[in-house]
Image (cartoon, rainbow, N blue to C red; front, side):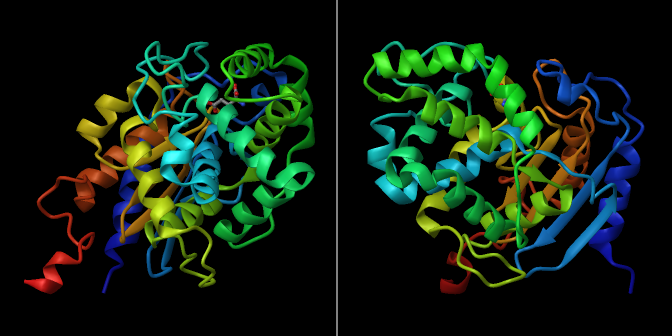
Length: 319
Ligand code: GLU
């Protein structure tokens, strides 16, 4: 019998690969030297079945896709209320690197934009001190099912030129949401953005979230399932920068993108999807990644409110 999941993936790939518009991120030179034509797409079920197509072994930096997993770790440490004392859960409607806080709560809008993610890095740094990077790498590696590392040259470049992120760090400190040494939190943020992954890794990490925090291939319990619930909620409302409203409406999959060209989608209790294609649209999302995810959502009925999207609920067993 033909593998329907693989067929749907191949079809989404074939549709999306024709898209050649968009531009590489160019805020640091390292991101401009990647091959713009690379495209990898992988999907892993919550039971651990993997389908893949294209350049699924090409390494790139995780960038803002890391924000979802770092947030999950912060939730485990402080609980939802504790984290919300520092970072909100409202879509900002502004660019990922906007230097702004919610004017009423005086906190970053959400953990999926830089301001919120830097506050989250402060939470992780406070908890784990000098071991914070190691702890994050260990956890991300468990989610990916293999040992991940940092792209040192991307990290150094981010560190050398990250003026806006440093400014955000200063403002967070002024608002009492971060403390000295501010650089420790901002550098941790840069390091976490510089973790190297592949599209296959992203699919596995996404599948770990879809499987209530347990890696479906290794069985490792990586994230607390309550933290996963909160993370997926914020991914659905805020994960695609200032495209999040349209994304949720059209695609309906909790997702997070990064300017390295990575994109994850998580369908609760069903599948994790990982995509890599470095050409970005004006809002910073991978052009092919968005196309492919839209196609998969339509073809497989993955939109959260699709009538065919079942399997996310215990209720059917109670009827
Ligand atoms: N390292 C990037 C920055 O902070 C991440 C941005 C992103 O992927 O959205 O500017």
